[in-house]
Length: 375
Image (cartoon, rainbow, N blue to C red):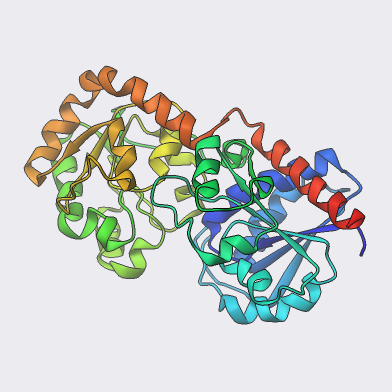
């Protein structure tokens, strides 16, 4: 096998910021190493190709995966994806010629799970953090190495019997992503910015019970500029999100985004002054720089002793729709009593957020590559 590493950019665009910083770091550490970046759509190709223009002489190749789909959507919009399992099945013979493949989602791990004779060693890097991650998924055990952000996250895998030598804490890779869409949306007036970020799964989300009412109440209050940026997949299950954003288009106090790359590249969690949400792991990215948070218990969860809601120690938890605006109004003055818990939660969950994580991840990949050749 030649010295090559494959990166699998086959899923949603939200995975890109968790993978591309490792591509850059690997190019810095091993500039002669060939990297094959397998992409599933023309949107992935356009985004990544634009960034690679900074490295015109690096042996990094964008390759179209079998079933590659050309999509006619606005730049950055999350594209419709080709069927993943047929794509992986057709890609398997090509990956078999590569010593190491890197992915950020579980679906790609069906290859080593179902084809244990495949000589390629898979490295899985995390794309989400938080207490609701599905760490018991049987596909995860097929990864040769799993890169997690923090030692706390690593312990959760070890408690499930994962081999300790194959679980490595690197820090939060996305913290090293440099290609954010913009620093702050344009608003007509200079007001504090509120980010509302509901989850896409109905049993975890505030959207179906309270979401539209919250958006309308916040705008009627006139105290904040609102970024409404739900999880990209929410619109698949709640098409009314698209209709609401169309209705609000053109307002100077609102920025709606349910599908663009900016919704997943860290732009909004960096720009907001106050976070309003339910169980999205994006709150942990927000807490890289501790700021006020309010959490929505729209489903009446008994959350205090449930580790699935560990992030709710970072702000006031609201149990009724009538309580949302008052909680937002006092969030700034209440923040000091949550600041220590926020800092501890971010550190425990994300590990190092200095931007060094991609280099650590790249070093681990080089180690797997060397081990593959020696073994």
